[in-house]
Length: 158
Image (cartoon, rainbow, N blue to C red; front, side, top):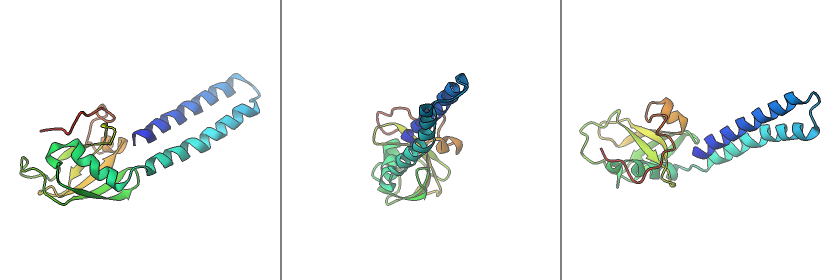
């Protein structure tokens, strides 16, 4: 998801630069128009391609990478909305440090050790989770906006 957000920002910057250049010249040159068209077409395509790189297995791996209590739980995830929302089921219950997991939120950490989203437990036993990546995890109030994309040296404790 981090790649998608980076590509979105790049696309926005390209569009803004194109608008400024066009505004500075009464007659836009063909190269500027071609660059603007390319940005409009290629940036969303790259963002979609980046979103597809996130597999169900990647999301499953990100749960225990974000929270030590979920280590050894063997999550399996299915896509609800590609690159954004996943439903995950654990093969083994999480650590017993929490007596009722329902509603508990935990961050997820990608293979590059950066917070990429978070999950909310749907059951008291902690065996079923709804997970969101990127800005959607912030919108769902699972993680704070300043936490998304932060480096994580290891699974969180407590």
